[in-house]
Length: 503
Ligand SMILES: [Zn+2]
Image 1 (cartoon, rainbow, N blue to C red):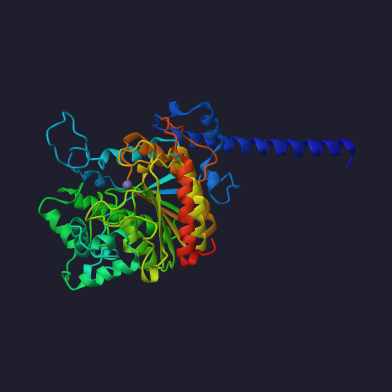
Image 2: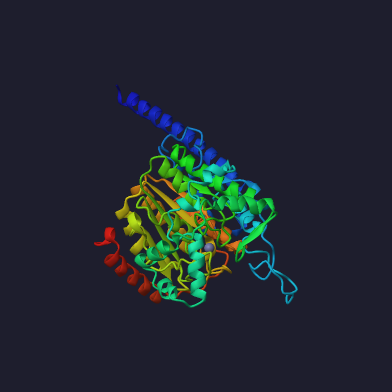
């Protein structure tokens, strides 16, 4: 080959390479335009993005989260976040009143809607459909649960493997109110003491009483206040069944290998619902039912991490005697709040029998914010989950831990929720092959709950930069106090939780 021929050949190769690269760039641009169109289609959020965020959005493509992104000629794969939702859940409508009481003593001109109202979830659906996270989401229709499905968690009382049965708890609480001997027992809730209470009261239990029957009956009679702030109205039962069934569908989606990240956007919430007791706006334990489904499908170890601002007492109680489920709850230190919620959420409620050590409570001081929560995640949650080695992670998420929630006294911001999401992503990556089920619980600030949800899911998707800026300033936390408390919890775990002796 002459020198000229060689140069021509090189030139042709260069032209060919340039043409291929040009075509490749065009294809990428078309894809990016498609994604950008989908991202902004119908969106009112673009004006909310700062220039830096717009720039970072341009560098983020949902495809980067999908395995084998090198083949850019393929059509865009399905988005990685599978959201399960059914608008029938909006029909549940607890009454307005003085905050969540449902009553009006007549002193106010304008009453609040009940904090657990449908508007909060409407906004969550809206921000996921219209916000910049929209291209990362595929939507799936929810469904109703059958009553038989509910019995996996909400077993008849005489089969309930809970810490203390409902009648027993009511008696304990009654004694508490009357300041009798059990007062001391309940204030020092050691496993031995509560077990003794259970044995003493067992003979007095009503046989064959079904909690689910009580719910069905309440629905038939048009409604009932089950406990403080927890109202069932004529449309609530259908919403409850939809919340449970939708959560089960999202778990099934993961179990069947159709995705790795599923989010059950559901209401009424569920994590206070105990096997035989409604509590805290909750009737059916959606996350608990999903965990049972995973266990029944052969998953031997499931970890549940609850970041709602309230203690996930219902989920804890459902698995209190199980070593198959590690329940970890980070919550404000609110203690027990009545007969429906006798659990204190203190660090010494750590499980019973086979479950001893597998219920870990992290009561955080009021005012704990981003740094305190992240410290608790890194110092307590991550090491415990790593030691437990779960096959599946369930993140029970409530945005009532935010700085502006009317029902909480903590100070998480979007940045903190995002970082928690990233920590969960990393845990799932290393221990559960990326499998995460996210289940919606509380979160009562209409605006900020939706924004914090967006931030949490961004974190779980492990997006490199925020897609949305925080629209509200935040209240500074007292991190020194929070961290001191977290260190005390860590020391307690080392001394009292067998499988965490050396962590
Ligand atoms: Zn809550």
